[in-house]
Amino acid sequence: MEKVWVAAQDEIVEGTCKIVKVKNAEYGIYRVKGNYYAWRNACPHFGAPVCKGVITGTRLPSLVYEYKLGRDNEIVRCPWHGWEFDLITGEHLVDPQTKLRQGKLEIAKTDPDSLERAELELQPDGIYMWV
Image 1 (tube, rainbow, N blue to C red):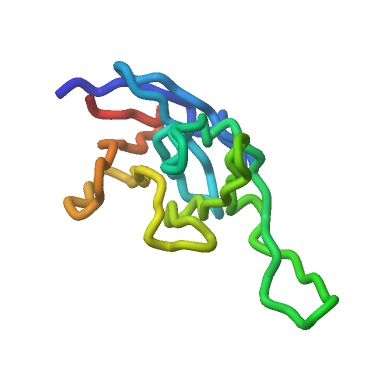
Image 2 (image 1 turned 90 degrees about the horizontal axis):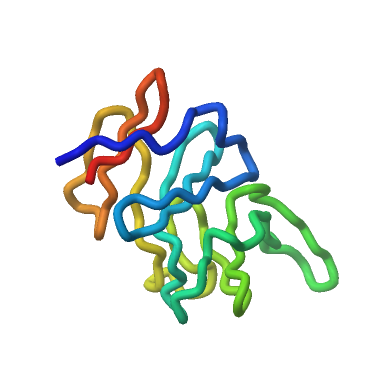
């Protein structure tokens, strides 16, 4: 395997995404609540470049005619059809069985149970992806 530098830690601030191309695949790298996450740039609905979507929050459960907003910078909205995904879990907000392809950035750890997991590593000099 080859370790490829993909970003400096300070390049990715809350509420932004850096899209990187590694080999033949694109990934969006996000920072949410101080943790880094990488998602494959393909919406499970029609393959849209989901990481180019708006990073936002969502409505929280509330009374009729009352709109409580929350989860700022935790949701990405697909630019083609508006599907919304949780940036921490990759789950679709309406159907949790529909998920983005995941790869959480961790400090020198791997998660063998992740599906199509990108091998990513956080180091003092930047963020690396193993290919």
